[in-house]
Amino acid sequence: MSDATKAIFTGDRCLSCTACMANCPVMAAIKEYRGPKLVGPAHGRMHFSQEDVEESLNYCSNCKSCDRACPAGVAVSTLNMLQRAEYYKKHKQLRHENMLAHGERMAKLIRKMPFGAKFANVGMNVGKFLGVFNALGLAGKRNMPAYASTSFKNLFPKIRQAPSNKKVVLFTGCYTNDNEPQVGEAFVKVMNANGCEVLIDEGFKCCGSPLVVTGFLDEARQNADNNVAKILNWKRKGIPVVTPCTSCSLMLKEEYYELFGEQEMREAAENVYDAFEFLEILQERGEFNENLKSLNQKLLYHVPCHLKSQAIGLPAANILEEIGGVKVQTADAGCCGISGNYGFHKDKYEISMKVGEKLFARVKKKDFDKVISDCGTCRMQIHHGTDIKPCHPIEILAEAYQ
Ligand code: SF4
Ligand code: SF4
Image (cartoon, rainbow, N blue to C red; front, side, top):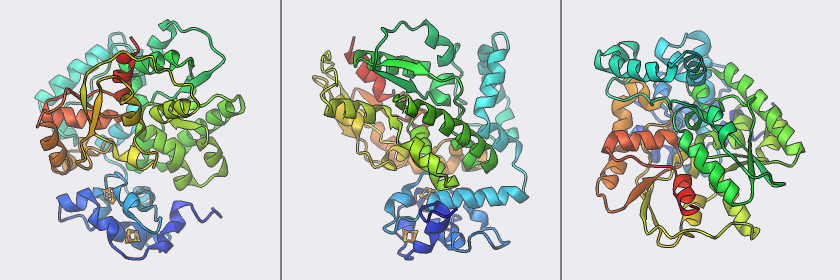
């Protein structure tokens, strides 16, 4: 608790300039939200000594646009999440909040049952049709993400790889593991093409992002401690941990330390890379495999908020433009609105769709061949708002290595 860069102390730096408010997409979408300055630094300054709770804090989506706008380095969104956790110390989470926070646990249970994924997917469709989602507090107009018939971790042992001295550990993230294992397969293919053997660590747990946003901070801390210990273990062996999910990488690289302030979280962060950030490092070292098949595709790139927050530029766009005939244009249309599990709450659905309007309009112009985005829930939101299904940029790169 002594390091002044930990989020709880950053509220004291607030200059009251309101840049965070001007950049908050939720504040622009609804008048009920009183905005990041008030619910973040203003309450953060009190260091949670007050009894009162700012009720509109519940509207914050943790998109982190406010943090990026702040000239004083206030960790506004993390202050919001810490205060949300204070709120939930006195108020029990609702059933649907509990469900959305514990997606990893649910997926594990489902996969233990015979034909579990298949039954769960049918059940979700029937549940949506019968209005069960609405009754549970979930957004009834939204499809729940379908479970893949086989998780990535079950597929992984069947993938044949040449042994290599250069190794990376894949932190799959829940969405790649349970819903889109093809992203994990594309990751392995790309890493193999670049001379890296991919390992997975069965001991990793969910990064904890869905737990943080729903106020389960103690559980998130347990996941953080578990994951940090594993990352440090790989660091001692000289093997980097790489993830294709931008929310996971942000959590592992920055949010653990902001939330919990342990020095080893910073040390672990030095061994974590976003997938394309890692490929850019290989490129800088002259180790990137440039033997790429020409694709002739115009790609529209929605840059996830949680990638922007990492301040590493646009590594996916830079790498994909190495492919002959590929042109990448950024959508430049702000937050997609779903922000992890935010848009799955019934009372947040309309807000999330309003926030996403500008992006949906941009995608609907259809002046491209494919839409790409590194974040699984951004891809879901774009698909839901436009009927156009995006893919992960690593799937495009894998295609070019064929
Ligand atoms: S995290 Fe996003 S929704 Fe929350 S206050 Fe900041 S900008 Fe607004
Ligand atoms: S942008 Fe930063 S300094 Fe300005 S009001 Fe918001 S938190 Fe305070």
